[in-house]
Image (cartoon, rainbow over the protein chains, first blue to last red):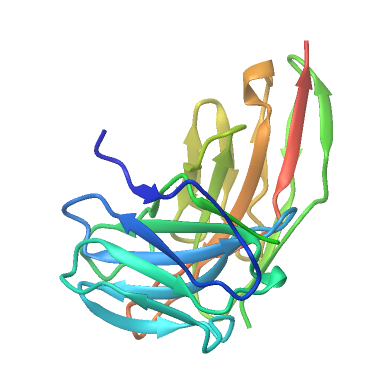
Length: 116
Length: 115
């Protein structure tokens, strides 16, 4: 399977704990996105990487959130001191090179976070 | 700012009925428009897209036309099947000087098709 993969698929944690999620994009895709989806809502943009550079961050991304893509391949999203409001599905997407708005984004299955 | 408004669901139809899911948008410039589908237990999949005014995207019997005058991108299918039951998301990708081309999604419309 050469699609976008995410790990873990589910994470249950207690409030105040730190969590880290991983995303492996399609291998030739240099563009990587993180989104957050809460129940009954559409995904909301969190951050964007082009290769290893983080080029845009949403205001939704508080100081407790940090994302990295150290070698321009896989990416990690860390949430420190989790809060119940962080409970959501975290989606990763990738798209191929080319500065064009009609590039399809390919989505992973998501990591569902539950903060107790 | 950029935003997408979708009709609220759920939409319940009988098999072979005609489907319309309304989507309107607000954007600066000329965004690209997309419909994504999320089947139960699966990730988001691109259903169709349109990149400029009057373009028609189509796939699997679904169609949507980019209407700049009415800022709309309504999804239609002439005859739905039980297997079309899913959540449908309208999205736009605004022009980006930074090259981000992030998506702005609507809230999604759940479709249930009864046999």
